[in-house]
Length: 132
Ligand code: T46
Image 1: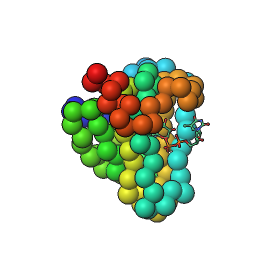
Image 2 (image 1 turned 90 degrees about the horizontal axis):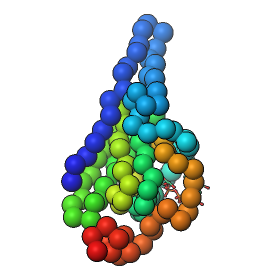
Image 3 (image 1 turned 30 degrees about the vertical axis):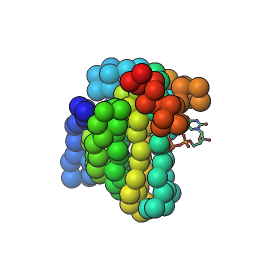
């Protein structure tokens, strides 16, 4: 499956680093929600669902974790460890997050408000919806 990542510019000087993310310039959808995941223990697996309509961009602000992306045909693993790189989580892609390093902060930009009915949390149900 195709993995899409977005690189954000690193604007740094002798005082430190700065990265900017602008809606519609860097992110291909209006950002309606931002959330972040932190204090996750190393052996914890998060995600394990797909979204029916939601599009998201995941950015590790600090630390690292691995995403497993699955389109119902193929699975790929993507290691995220940079605040200048965003991983596109498209609709109807099953995703899981593994191997959180201590201190990891994972920020997610989302195209819509939280809606539990948009989640498919059962893998067999996901396979039936994605490739009936
Ligand atoms: C995703 C991955 C990358 C809310 O009330 N509002 C929210 O906006 C979110 C994101 C979550 N919640 C509640 C729902 C659960 O009771 O927070 C709790 C934890 O959510 P969840 O178990 O879905 O967390 P993850 O880390 O498994 O998944 C999250 C997002 O929910 C999901 O959309 O794509 O991160």
